[in-house]
Image (cartoon, rainbow, N blue to C red; front, side, top):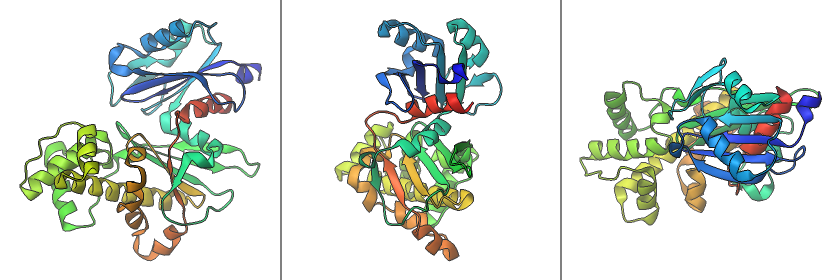
Length: 323
């Protein structure tokens, strides 16, 4: 038990673009010394971790936990949306950690959901959470992550991860069907992540340009998002609306699958950048658009996670205790 509760701890939130590190000084305390490193600037996770620790200038913590944007199954990990690959045990030995716990990044984020403050949550639509019920989580960034958080009779939180970002995308309109057909021609399988992610927003923009026979010159997610939010680019705005609609469908599917009566949380780096515009998007209508279960979903609240620092850092620390 001493190993499970030893502080301080090194924690990390490793995505396809950024690697965030911090120190947890005590149980449930907000992480400190937070730093975000660009993953592309380091050849390995170990190099990024070493750079952070060297800059920190403090004694190395004995224990470490990270959430990573990847399935965690066995000792060896090779990231889906990044070049990093490593052996969990080899990293533990290299740094001399007593314990090194690695979980999916959305498992880490799910474990942090109960600690989020009201100021870090932006409601989208109505609904009332059912106390003690399962929480759902979906988020679009470099990829599309999903997870859920359930509670035992003793109130202990149990995070359940998955690869729901790779489920098949389903259309609700003729134009969406045409866009999905374009994605299928390009990728073979039109997964949710091919549309609902940073790269997915670009994919939608280009596919919609093909369907509407319009030029789609933008190549970067930030450029499409900026053009859409600026109001001067109708194609980019339509792509962003479709992005939000697909996200609503995916979130509604997850809410039904896990019975997320405690609420649905929207994470990732894209949606918070939309600000209040997201509440006006097709997201909520599509979240509820499930035929006979529209009434069921209308009672489930949705919140956008809009926190200054990654809650998954605290979740990683909680994963160290749960492992």
